[in-house]
Amino acid sequence: MSDNNNWDNQDNQDNFSSGSNDPGPFTQPGRPGDYGGNGGGYIPPQREMEFKDWIILNIVLLIPCVNIIMLLIWAFSKDNKTRSDFCKAYLIVAVVAMVIGFILTFIFSFAFAAMLSDLMYYAF
Image (cartoon, rainbow, N blue to C red; front, side, top):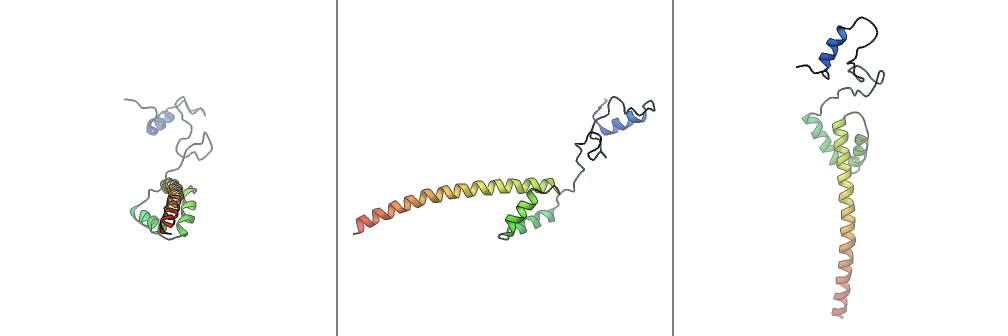
């Protein structure tokens, strides 16, 4: 079974070319080793987050004020895609939770004010 999208097969086909500078009909842009040159689009592999990295991330998120700053830094850095995606998701969930909290606070404050006004009406 032949798979032309496999990098190993691609290298084998390049080795059997006619010797010209033509890379051959199966050459794909963005092969490993291309960092923005010939076709670009290739992202070099990144180190996977280990257990200790997750522990450090969670400890930093427990520190007030520092957590917001570090979330923003990590969310928009290109250092580690896994951590960046986690921090973006964490920020989105935090913003949604704050908006829901403000809405509920607004609703319950009016309900409490109405309850207090009724209490004052019946008390005096």
